[in-house]
Image 1 (tube, protein in one colour):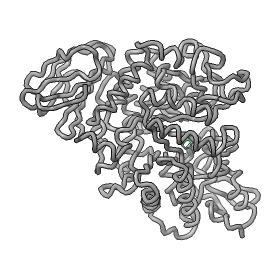
Image 2: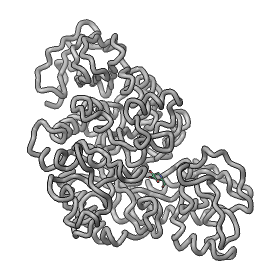
Image 3: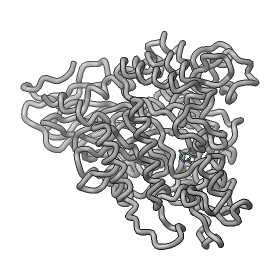
Image 4: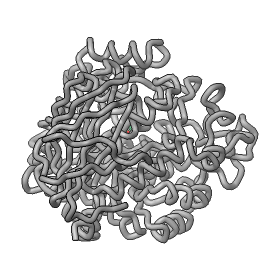
Length: 557
Ligand code: NOJ
């Protein structure tokens, strides 16, 4: 019963959907999305086949970093609702078969958090050591600054304390001192609180920074990974299947260490920033090479572990792991204007505008997302092909209101447009052209296609659970990969180039009497396996998924 196994490590074959409550749906008409609005759209999300929601921060915050600057870890920003509304959301999501994870932002607090207020006001405060202080800022390379547009250094002078404090992000986000056992206790308490309210785990913000002990004065006797192991075992004690999804943007070898190696006792899920960046390079070049190379470096060591794949997230599309020349190629292809770029390392656009609205190419990219080994993570609006609003500052350009219909404010809110949390996209990708209501009624729309592909993805656990290999093809633009699991075999083929082609894909080991089941298309499987190779005609940006079946196997329809 292979499928029964997939109910255990639920995150391995999940489809995760990230959203910001503030920009999803405004239910009380104040211009700001809220928990009540989100709850009203749980059925929409369940209908798409989303199995897990990831909520960006919704706690009280001065909102200088869109909620990633928290002042109270145990509350809900009153503009978004109450703890009662939060529990109602969780209960509704669970009833529709969806799990919920939330951001755990504990690398830093807001500088308005009562802990920091107390810490800066007196050296005797019990919270003084919750943060990291220095009399003189240690020399540090400028590359350590995460937001170079706003910050010169990771150390800021605090008048009240008469000392410098550490902040890897904005200077209004002082870093917590992870070497302080009381801070670690608080982190566990925060996680325990939300688990008790029913969440299924956490997207852990800025993991390498959270564990960083450089800069902390005195002898720091802490193995950073020990803290992650402690957090994982705490979560598992409180909730056996609770998950940690780590935000770690490091090269593959360093990245893997956050799984906890063969012990697999740290985070279960890691975003695959490397694969994502290689994908954009491959798309820009119309050459599968970079993606194939990145896939070969994507290695899991235990069954629990999984990579989380994404096309876009809520931040800039970072290309920091590419060489300068490679990054220039991607900029040139997908964001040539300065205003589309950010921090010299990324793009502040969404996919559909980068691909100039080319439906075939957009679908090919999402077909890749859903077939690459790992758990797919969607950012709200991707399912309908929303673009960014470059009129919104910096990284926030991609966090414009969800486009529900073609009415006022795209159906996001009844408030006057000037009162909206952020302005709606205008023009070619605005709600008149791109909205969920119209796409629901059109079986050829991106949304309808997404529903079908997500359904297929969830019925194809080989992609999530299997061992994968890159297949040889004789066309540079074509990526072939294969996933094997429990005696089943699935092959996906993607043409990253605009030119149609006939490609021969070397399948590897193929049993006698094998046949191909086409998993995406309505057309019957016309393609024949000859020996171990498959000859296929692919249109420009074409994609196919197949199961290599044998007469004795019963597979989904
Ligand atoms: C990473 C988050 O994705 C980003 O949006 C945020 O600004 C920083 N961490 C700081 O919390």
